[in-house]
Image 1 (cartoon, rainbow, N blue to C red):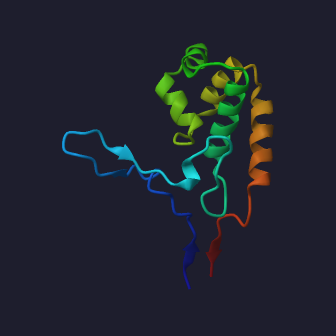
Image 2: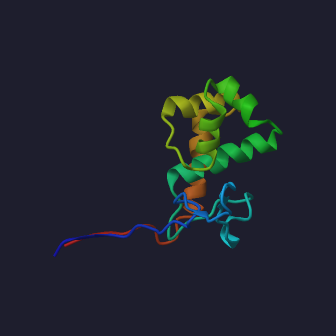
Length: 133
């Protein structure tokens, strides 16, 4: 017949939605029970995305070293905002950026990719399905 691709549905906070606020007030991000902890990555639906696993590993290493975003970003030569987006799994960094951030954290690219592949293996579940007829 055709091709069926299953994509996990993202929570409202991942889609950039906010709760309505009072007139002139800053909107408050929607939060749910799934987004109350930064301790471990959450797989939305059946699989963990590469960029989410990379971000979790980088943030985990940075917090283990008690380093700030600004310090690591400066040493890696990227903006603090960009590093934050990488850590939150919102940006897909190039291999050059991963090398720079990893080096700022004293991680080789091999160490980082090994950690990420382990996280993906543990969080794989059923995975996304691509069915073709």
